Length: 425
Image 1 (cartoon, rainbow, N blue to C red):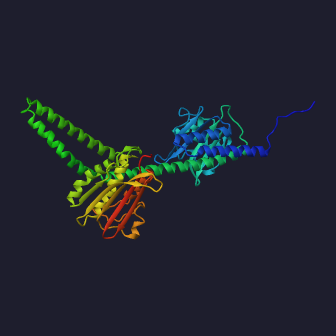
Image 2 (cartoon, rainbow, N blue to C red):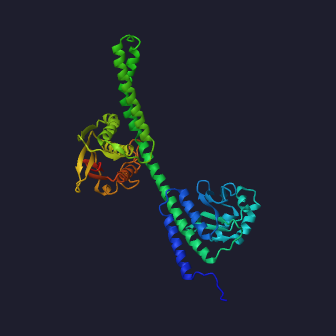
Image 3 (cartoon, rainbow, N blue to C red):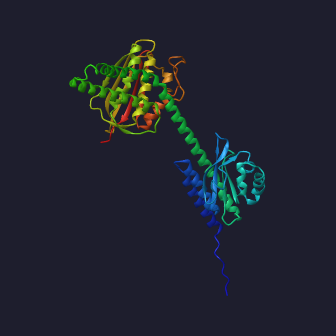
């Protein structure tokens, strides 16, 4: 009788399987759309390789200076594992010191020490944890994963631990990159909002000017209505005028609220001429107070485009206000034109041209005007530059698949041209 044993995988086969699993894990880490998604992929990947069915992932929270539970699977949940683990928790201290995967035997002391501490983190001491996997970036603990099996104590082979260590490093890199991207995205959102708020003073002046006439007609109607209440023609005609004026004021208020409130980019079918005219309305009062003449030349039947109305207004207002600031020392002219632009590939675009007769920009500075925090404005109570406006404008236009160009001559003036794609044929 011949002895038969279960077939054993060769080291080559085991290595190939590990490489395939690592490759798949790296792909899973690519382009996550949210923190819970990337955390769930990390936890499920480590759980699958270790064959430990239950687990929880904690992530370092910089604002609260502690580790917070992000995702869990199996019986480890917020009801059994603490939602918050402090930085001085023995388990965190042990992971930070060893910077390696810890199994149940290595975890015994730290979990016992935690059980003696009457804190929320002491809850972890009651969990039968088989593995604690640190996620390290530049030797700093940014997250850790706790895994356990429903059958209690298990032995993790050394080659599995090695694979888990590589996966943990891959996960830490991906998690750190995602968090840096989120920080950058939030910073850009704050920059855009700050730039919008900077121009609200001018918008408020234009708003006050725009609503003066409607309010006058409404006031007149209220004053005359008691005397003319029996004049049906007067009541009907003036009621229509007042209703139109009220609707006009409501539109202006909504326009200001939409501009001040930062929103995610939203492309809608827009008339660029109408957006330009809206911006010019708001700056007219400021231009008049400075003796600046505005010349407007808007091309008829300009092709429409898919634009984020508020973002394009932000760009135009920034350029218009910069142009008026450049003419602060002399009476000047601000010219705004729109034209239909035919690209070399036959595609139809639209162009907005903003030209001033100000002091111009030197050739040395011209190459840097779109750089973050670069400004040619000297700090003053009137014209203090943040150095962010043109950077944000450049970014918004690029996100619209457009182009922004500048030409300038010192002592003569500056011209900005914004090219935007229209609807495709």
